[in-house]
Every structure is written in structure tokens, then in C-alpha cells.
Amino acid sequence: MLGLNIFRLIGDLFEVLFVPFKWLRLEVAKGDAGWWTSNTVNWIFLGVLVVLFAYWMNQSATFLREGTEDRA
Image 1 (cartoon, rainbow, N blue to C red):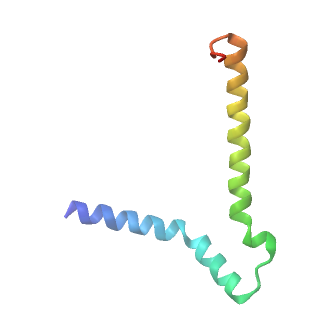
Image 2 (cartoon, helix red, strand yellow):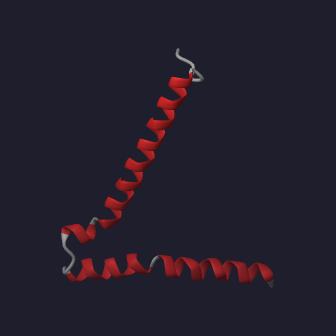
């Protein structure tokens, strides 16, 4: 019984998490959504990618300064 409740909980969680996508799908189907609205998710992913890349480059420079990174 506990296993079924866990799967129901996961299903309910994803129903709540995907509400913005459902709204966006309905807006695009009506033709009311503009380009910026349609590509909001892409812009969020791009922002996360830029932040992670900056963090990665900062860590790489730190290791290079400390001399702990091997140069081939």
C-alpha cells in the first residue's frame, strides 16, 4: 500500500510542476502567446547554462592558479 501512495505522490507532484507548461500549451494553441512567452523555458535553461559555465571556468582558473590541475 505504501508503494502505491508514493507513486500517487510523485504523480501529483508532477501534475503541479507541469501546470505552467499546460498553460503555455493552451496559449500557443490559441495563438495568443508571443515569441518571448513561447521561449521563456529556453531562456531559463540558457541562463542556468551561463551560470554553470561561469562557475566551471572560475573553478578551472582556481585549480590552475593553485597548480593542482594537470597540464597535458
